[in-house]
Length: 574
Image (cartoon, rainbow, N blue to C red; front, side):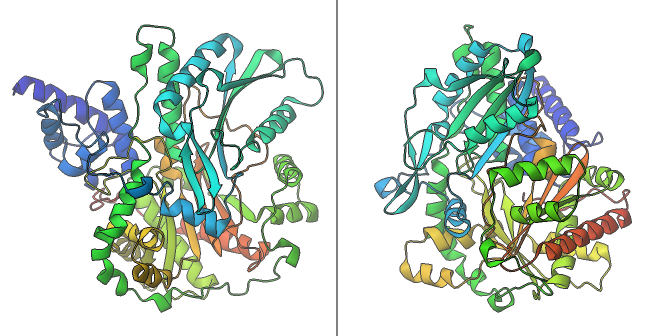
């Protein structure tokens, strides 16, 4: 081995990780996961290194832990070795093709009623002189051609909902809508009306692909690129990866490098198959740990002093076009009153923000520290406002770290999210720092981060095992922590940040499977907290009280935690 080459590569890798970890004093022999490295941070570093020609994977970081060991392994790797970044032979084909939906996807379809309107969308703004529709169309065709998730559809069969592959006409994927001469309505209303229509065009019966690429040509020479996909095809990280690959393909479209610019991700169809094997092999061996759970502590959680429930006509939250658009408009205008309260009740959601100073302190924290603060705040509030004795909470997890050593899904464009439960029991009389340390140790107690909970419920083939798993209660509290995704993987297309412009009624809504579900995100330097609630069980006023308490608890914890604390966080598993 050339020592000079190894030293040069080590320095290059070290520089990238110092930047993404915001830790200039990181040394080549430091454990990355003691300095705030998580799967989201690691993926960001790996993508940068791949662009620089260093073929490193997220699994490499989890296996070798330090810059020096990781770089040596990568530099000395034989060309035939992939480091886990490609499809693995151990993910064998299952009889009948195997499962096409993950346990979480089945849970969302069956328990939350997520159907054709469960979409995720993004929009980017551009000036006409900056953008070539022809080049963008070629880029879309190139990227769709090599990514199976983008060529998938969802169908309803006698066995339930399944994903299937289709072969779309690659030359006809981008729709152009010319609104440049429209005179009826403002720019915002034109965008809102058009994007609302596009988001409702998916169907489980047509067999068409469930992603749309729309170019909107607007008055005054402006334009928008609008991309919408069914959420069971793409998760949030995948949208960021898709925007990145579209940009790469766009820049090289029409050149000799065009075909080399598109990098196929691992096949997303391998993930549900690997989970099936896990459920019927490894997870079975983890049963003693699950049988030690105190399931009675987690059952029958209900709201305390929930107040007046919504009327019987609101047994499931309603999300009409008019009410969603009108709610947004009134909120933008700063209006309030009974009419607005009724509209917001119709959304079965209430929102708030941390103040700017608290948001900045929170966003500056390293690694899992911010997530642990969120869990402590939710724990305190749930103990106060529900009948829960301990916290049994579902967490939406990207699964892009090292869950299994034989498959790397970190760069997969597809739906890799899984919902995993976390079991927590804190002594609220202890100081905040003690509670945070308890969270750190308790959230990793379940095997494979709790992946077996739904895997056994939905994928176990042994009928006795399925019956036993069916007795385990689902969590009544949910958490979707998007701050790391927003911070580490913004969906940037052609150097254009994702537009915060309103794109019509959000069609990623459905009835919540939880009593309360907390969603944390970051936008424009502020931490946004959203509480979705079950209107059959609690009132809007109750949900708002809970939200205000969560924000108050987070503010108190953040202000009391010293910013000079040691950065050593313990081994991260996210």
